[in-house]
Length: 345
Image (cartoon, rainbow, N blue to C red; front, side, top):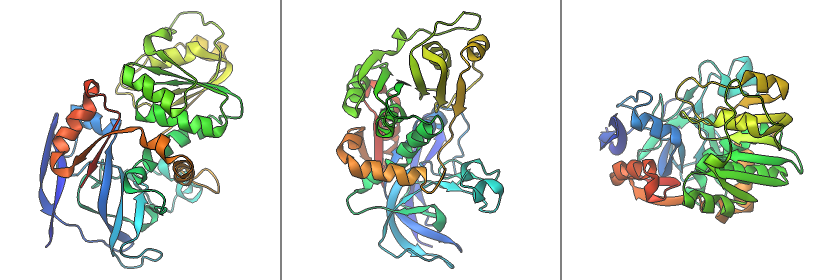
């Protein structure tokens, strides 16, 4: 059997790059030669030990590459074709899958988490996860489609519309891409918070109207009476154990909407009185889907085509697969001024 190189999370803050068997595509699958894979904030949760990582599964769900081999019963793709992967395996039979909400399928699996991902030279994926990568997008932009689709989904679930005032909490990759997605949706003003100076500069480059330090947005704690707030929509992108839901509720106008994209690692208290008095709508987003004729991936690809260099500015560091350990360490250390870190297997 042919061999390949892949990266694995071997333990807390430990990356192992080693040889392993090259997979073969099964029926309905395609073998991809991965060209670029991004490191996501959720990958860092596994890296830091917040969630248990499987040391036998390569992480990475933001990736693009080329078709090298096609399994049985696959049509529409050919060897050498450039593709980006929507990394959700699903049953394709349940009501969620039939209506485009396949991200909610009870049998869905995110590649790079519970099935092999893109931090490897080759990976076999279901053919239905593939999108053709347009000729005007290179592989590193192709690897931005997935996180941009998360941001697009976050904007869709709260229906950001023309002229609205939007607050984006956090200027990491998802925050920066949410700025871009909100502007494309027609937001009239987008204010973004940041913790590190390089994040604030990146938010302005992404199109933010104004940036403010994260601590300048007061947290509305449980039991406190809310002020009216001024934002039509707040997009939360930080998660972890941050007090951002309290900040979102405090900043929101009555009747406003909150989109929650950050991955929280534990229980979070919120001000239920404010939630009711403001008649706020809070919607949480997990990955992406096909809410209508066009999927979130379709929209993300079109956004990248319309302004590729604005999105490319999010990429700050690039590493070969052999240096995957350094790539993770760089992504985890904001002292390196990292935003999006990508690896080229």
